[in-house]
Image 1 (cartoon, rainbow, N blue to C red):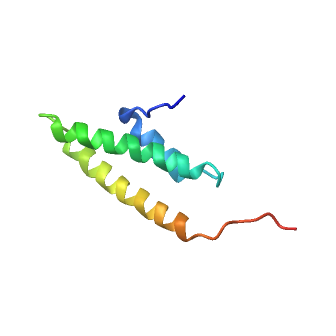
Image 2 (cartoon, helix red, strand yellow; image 1 turned 120 degrees about the vertical axis):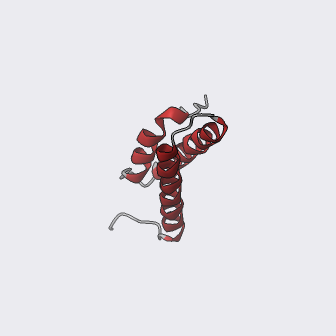
Length: 82
């Protein structure tokens, strides 16, 4: 079963992605946060009385997630010591 992240919970999903220690889970955490953030961003664009501060915070957070993803793709796989 696929669970769609709640866009209103984007801040918690974002924090979960940033602070995930388990390397095997970080990719899914980033994807969940990104999905919720993009949905929330679309909702803010179509809202007549959208919160400008949230839109700015959302934009900055999306940029940080992009940087995190870039770091993850260039980071060598970590292997346990023999």
